Each structure stands twice: as C-alpha cells, then as structure tokens.
Image (cartoon, rainbow, N blue to C red):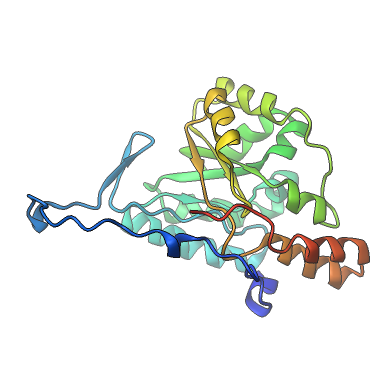
Length: 243
C-alpha cells in the first residue's frame, strides 16, 4: 500500500485497451429510460450495480481501516467485495482482524475470500476452506500470479499441479470458485481450460492500471535484490490488456 501511494506503479506503455472499445449507438431503442435497471444477477444473487470491489489488502493495522470502509460501501450499495490475499492471516492469527472486520461491517454483503493457487498446492484444500470460514465468505477467489511470485523476493517458483488443485477445489468446496489474475490477464485458451475445470466465474482484469511487477520491482530494490529488481523492470509492462 505504501509503495502504491508513493510510487508510480502504473503500466508504462500499455493500457487496458478499453479506450479502443466503442459501444454501438441504438437509434431505435423501443424502451423507456425508466425501465432500465442496473441490477444484475451474479452467482445466483442480485446486486444493485454491475460493480465489484476487487481484492486489495489485509494483514496490517492500516488495512483494517481500508477494509472496514470498503465493506461498509459494499453493504450499503449491495455490491460484492473481495478481500486481499489471506495467506498472512492463515499463517498468523494476529493478522486476522483486518480480514474479519469485513464481515463485521458487511453482515449481508456478498464477500469473496481470497487465496493464491500456490498456497493451495502447498497446504491443500483445507487451507482454502479455512479462508472461507474466516470471513464467512459467499465465494472464493483463487488468484493466479506466477509473474508476481517469481519477482517477489520471498516468492515461489513451482506451479506444477495448479489445474489439478483448481479441479479439486471445484469438487470439494461448496462455494463458487472465481479465478483471477493479479494484473497480467487470462487468455482465451486458459479461460476454456478453467471453464472445463468447473469454476463459476473468471475475473478478466488484465494489463493496464497497476502493475504488480512494478510493485515487486520497488520491493526488491528496497531490499537490495539486484536480480529481482532487474526482473521487475523487465516485466513491468507484461500482460494481456483487459479489453
């Protein structure tokens, strides 16, 4: 969060490409403006807006304030909200408050737990179930972040068995499973594989906006890791544009 507030961590030469998407004008609508509703059904629940608060943060004192505010907004507006990666809270109980506050402030909101595929590979399906239980979640985000992990000073390098674990989660966990990337996007080919695996939804957010490679670049630089710093700079603009 500190890096995001103090540094320029946007993609340098790549955007979402949404500026190239143009909606077609309907000259003969045959509808009254008053009939138009922004409500949408998503994963079996009706929401007031086609809008979702994506996972952001958790695991430190200031994150509790951030998540509490976002949860209050989700509750008031009736929109779904994902929490940040819950790994830190699953490994240390003292960090759970910044995640549990979400359900406290939003007792009726659609809350989405969040854990990385690498942690599920290492810890097993029960690890993901504990994340759901911690915030009494309505669904589970499994985030894919191979580039971020490789650049992270403390990151993982082995992603073998990812698809197998996703299939296992879909069979063993009663809540809907949503797959997301953390800024590099999901290709059509991978989306088809994930659909066959049995997931409920795909978060298609991709390149454009915040670059997690950039954030890890600054973390590596502050830590004096020259190799990881070079990697972060090299892959700063890596990814599929959201559009």
